[in-house]
Amino acid sequence: MSINHAILGILSCRSLTGYDLKKIIQDSPFMYWSGNNNQIYKSLVELLEEGYVTNEVQHQESSPSKKIYTITAEGTAELKRWVLSAAEPPELKKHFLVQLAWADQLSSEELNTLIADYEEEVRMQILMQKEKHKRGTFAPARTKREVYLWDMIHENIIASYESELNWLEKLRNGITN
Amino acid sequence: MSINHAILGILSCRSLTGYDLKKIIQDSPFMYWSGNNNQIYKSLVELLEEGYVTNEVQHQESSPSKKIYTITAEGTAELKRWVLSAAEPPELKKHFLVQLAWADQLSSEELNTLIADYEEEVRMQILMQKEKHKRGTFAPARTKREVYLWDMIHENIIASYESELNWLEKLRNGITN
DNA sequence: GGTGTCATGTAAACAGTTACATGATTTT
DNA sequence: AAAATCATGTAACTGTTTACATGACACC
Image (cartoon, each protein chain N blue to C red):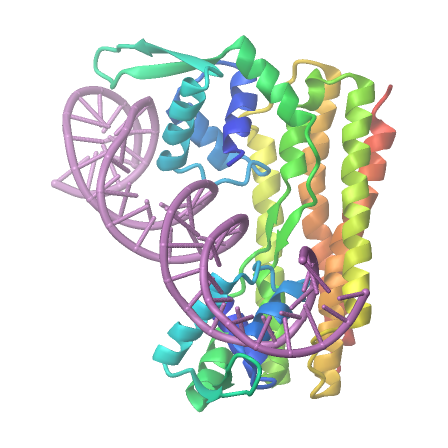
């Protein structure tokens, strides 16, 4: 459950509430967790127990009270330790490939429709990612290098989908109707 | 839980035991489930209850008895229904991007090491995929088109990793040490 | 004598999703 | 009048992983 580390990362930029974190994670293209309440609020309790964050309750008139979470020195150290930890290969779960594997029972028309539907989905993802990036809800820019890294993260995601589109074109060309 | 459908797909090629299915799924590059016992044997019970498969117990001298599962007509119909169902976008969970997002606190050397480690991981994945493909434990080849589809599935995975390597090169070039 | 393969299954834990619950304010 | 936003949290379920359990045989 490394959403804890993602939360630590976000909190290393600025202090936020669980509600804020939830929105940031839901809107993020690369923090791939759904960002549901259960995950966020549980993680924050854990991080609190481990001493990686502290919180300050802020009562507000005419609004529910907030808990503003702030990273501690131990939290910052743990974040760095984790960032340096062993890189893992990407987890690529392509449901579509499993469908395609058993698609030989389909007619040419059905197969073409299936492929077209997937292509449509991929194009939609690209649009959504670009839209998210333009609106740019949350992007730290503490140094030039950090701005570059975040741009490259965005590019990575776009490149993945575009590689998928290239493959789809080749797939389509190879299917003799 | 669409591992059920993947199992139906495999059984549509030939009748197999849970143990066989486990090995096939574990060795498969695109059937992304871990293929642990719990998943396989539970799925088979479910598929049996739904009437999508039947099984035949085969007692063996000097070996544990087998249950050989065979797909039914309803199973074949369900498989086709699922193959035609709405295509989903790929699920790309890149742990590394989350690390990179908070990597600005690292020194140039540390960052380079992190990137090099990831590149190594990706290269390793490519080798493993190609090795799996060469050994080719399970690949249906009932028609020319099916052979083509399975080749393209393999190519898709390789292309994904290669796109990652291209991006890594660009990332490395853009980092001014 | 230890490890690996064949073959079945269960238990416990962890991760993740959807939905529920509250309650005030603001927007449509 | 209904829906969305702010803000917290819980409950129930599904999915997934790791580990346990059995037992015979084959290989080194």
